[in-house]
Length: 70
Image 1 (tube, rainbow, N blue to C red):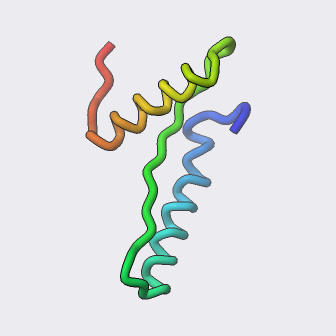
Image 2: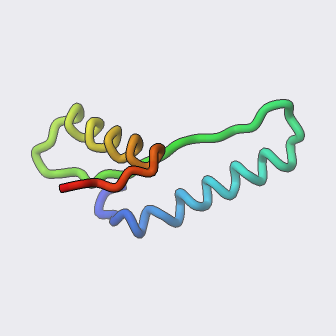
């Protein structure tokens, strides 16, 4: 999502979460859909491996409720 802040990206993410919950409630399947997500800013000059590493760290932090220490 180029030129998008994390705050601006929150709306479509929340919409996906809501739509997934509604799908789970209305379809009465013997399974539920779910997903994990994270956002990380792209730093100019970063290669794809570095960008994925940044997102992976954010995802891990969110999943385990970790607070970054700098």
